[in-house]
Length: 265
Image 1 (tube, rainbow, N blue to C red):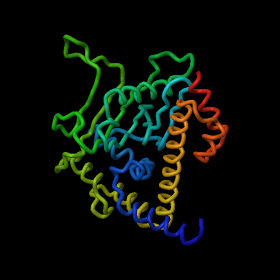
Image 2 (cartoon, one colour):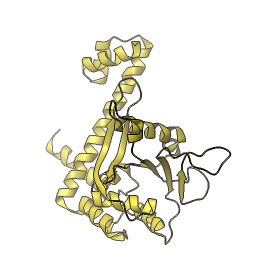
Image 3 (tube, rainbow, N blue to C red):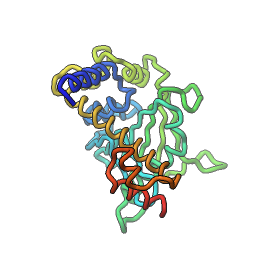
């Protein structure tokens, strides 16, 4: 890539960053990588002031050898050991109940060590912040806990699933937060800790460089994912050799070979 092409590509990425909102998952994960920002969001959504976030991880992958792996947008742990996953979902299909259930189960499997008693499982929250009202109840917040049929009692297994409807933007703490999530201009964000962090990634030299790298990495990952999915389709047709698929898609033969083993397993 020559210098002019590289600069043009960078200018397009910077222009894209200027238009990003917290409702864009790559921008949200960058901002919420800051513990103070993640803590603020969790406190407001759960309406609790006693939560102290100890650690955050962004784009955290929980791998599984035999089943579907998951990548969590923002994975946080507080000082009590409670686990939180915050997911931005702009499409309804990405926030279906089965996905929420699966993410919750994968967090459990990633938490409990071999030989540990099940009572050691920490409390966990899977939080979907959705662009539309996925559950169609016209509610700002949906808290889903397991219940015992025939009673009003909760089945206190410690797992919680929460849907936040970003469509409802009012003068409550949550409504203001959802308004902030749709702001392009950091100066229009009402919560200072979010405004400062968003401004850092949009306006400072170091922040913009970091965001450029994040966007470039995501684009490359999307390209690699597309190539892998295409290779799987080509393998299924059984009319192309591994070498031909590697050449046509410009990927390493070893990758295609590994995909071939999985399809034949």
